[in-house]
Length: 146
Image (tube, rainbow, N blue to C red):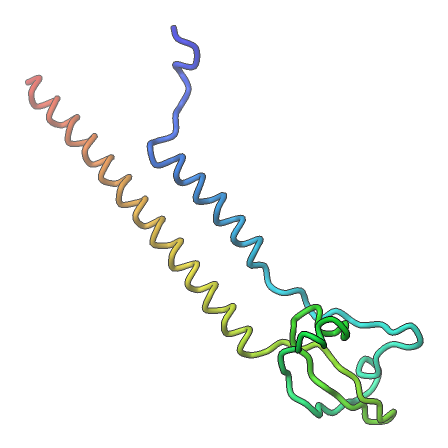
């Protein structure tokens, strides 16, 4: 008896399936959502918006190249809004999530999922055709043996 003769082998599309699964996992890791807002803690005190009421003076906007390098709040999402705290009257920047960015990420995710669904639907169709051919071949052999 040959070594490994009793082993089950993956069907022809099995290797492709595993490769696709590995690619999908890597894609999901790369497309992980941007981490939640990072709390910026200054050396003297915590941001005023954590402990008191505030008013948004400038809506959520993309950070400029200078702001990305100079403002730590821009690091987590790439978007920042300017706020003014009510009681202390301090103006600070606060990291925010842009609706446009969220919409873009949503549709990118949806497109990826539709693509993956189509690939797996094709794999199912191919496998079903293989099984149908095997079944027809068995029936043909049984009819010939009669």
